[in-house]
Image 1 (tube, rainbow, N blue to C red):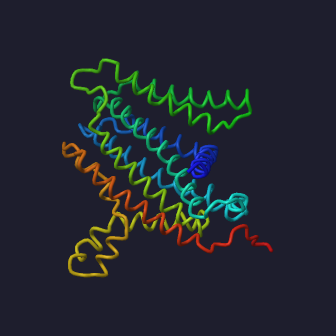
Image 2: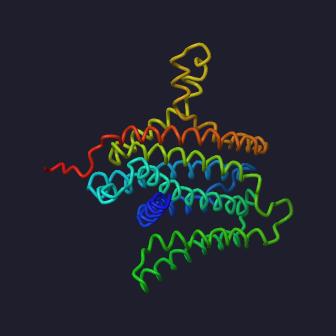
Image 3: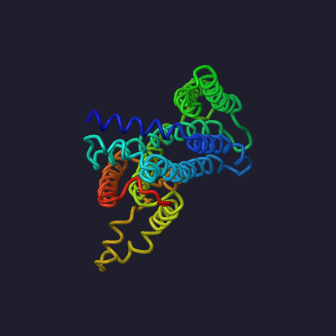
Length: 318
């Protein structure tokens, strides 16, 4: 267990040190923060558009970050032979692979948490179809700038990783900004923070975790671009699996097997229910957690099968 935790922690730290990780995270946070401004004058549909866009941004950017993180921590180490330094010690291949995947999932959890918190602030900013809460908006972007400033200061004074310091600072500053926004008295008819959106945010986090596990499994055999293409195809196929296979699954064994194996991402998407004014029950979140756990175990088994017998440290030029 100690070896597992050490490898997982190093994998998470390595992921957070990657400039592309900070770039994807900042792109998602800035885009979510700008949603209230981009959805003005939409005639009472602003909140719906902000919620839909924020959830979609988290899902899409989380998918991209999952592939990039898995490539940097698993595929690249297998390709350049760095993994041999770990496997030369008494470390089982399965333990190594599971720990690497856990580190990637931990980094994706940080991304999902920050994106979800940013979504709560963005919904508060979009208080009216013609006006925005500029105080909340200023606090949010002020937190983003302060996080980057802290990362630059750490890098200048201690030569530490700018990217990791900035992400860890945002992990404190964004929730702090949300807490301050929640304490500001809102206008009449405006909620402090829409806590009812938390179940939807958790379900999107589940989807990002499943995509991260899939990307980690495929990274044992594929480089970044093939991994990105395959994950993208599975993602798109899972979005339409109800239409393609769900209807025929009851009377066709092959359709039932395919429908069961392909992740159904629509189960994690609850924006339509929120738009209809319905809250997502916690019982549905619990069912989503069980389904996600099954997907994680399935993809971990796939990773073990793909990694078994995989040649590591092979030089293509040799």
